[in-house]
Length: 208
Image 1 (cartoon, rainbow, N blue to C red):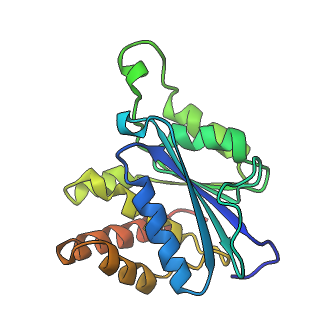
Image 2 (image 1 turned 120 degrees about the vertical axis):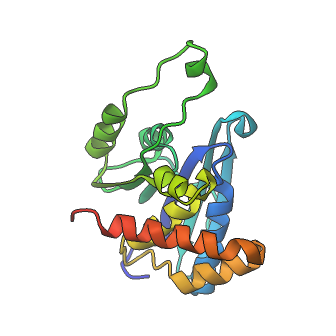
């Protein structure tokens, strides 16, 4: 991990049921296998009912840090759901933050019930662009659906994270594959690895 900043702070955010916690655990274990020290903290907002779920990952060369990232100090915000990414940016963003987000909205219950409005996707993405140094968007849910199950969207996002090419975030495919073998049954290996590969390819195909 190059650069002078230590730790690097990553937030993965989504809603309950998207596999946010599993994704953060897999990423953390993969980076630990690569010699880094990763501290993970989770926050939940009625996650069983589709509420917000946020994972804080603090990635260091040498030491454990407090599990929760201080406000305004995220280096990378990753959204499994775009509005959740924007909510995180409002609290943890700064002019240098980078953002990677899925483009598929998940409307909360109060929106479905007609008690609130969900912003247009274009408004969310333009707001993220205004608040970030750089934004990458990946159609993770669509990629997962093409594989037959939207549950793969979290693995697609992990692959996209690996594909960003950030020197301080050296998530390798072989490390991810090893962690897959530890956390998931053997029959799930091939499909989850394919989702990772598709996510990596999708972000690498984006314009520079």
